[in-house]
Length: 116
Image (cartoon, rainbow, N blue to C red):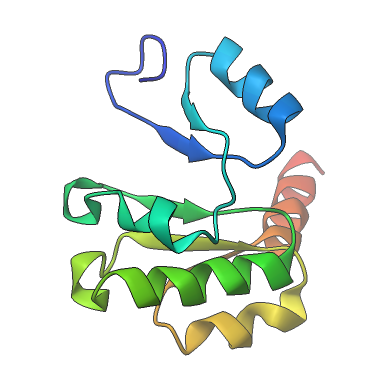
């Protein structure tokens, strides 16, 4: 549970260093690989309000998305999954899964435009 947020946030982070930082900030952190079928299968995704896939590596995000599709029926988390895409050209690769796409390059562009 994030401090003072009122919602439980669970993060799967394979880097022990990053996991420690996130724990210090008040998050629940599993120091595991996010593409591990057993780890993803251990969650009750029907209880999740959101699922964010945001490793920073589009290829790894694609592997996580594919694994998620193997461990739970799509209707379990329909409308709940958002994938952070670092390279705008990769967005189409994720659309076939029917998830929301958050294009990092567009977010940065909009932020810079609003500052101008």
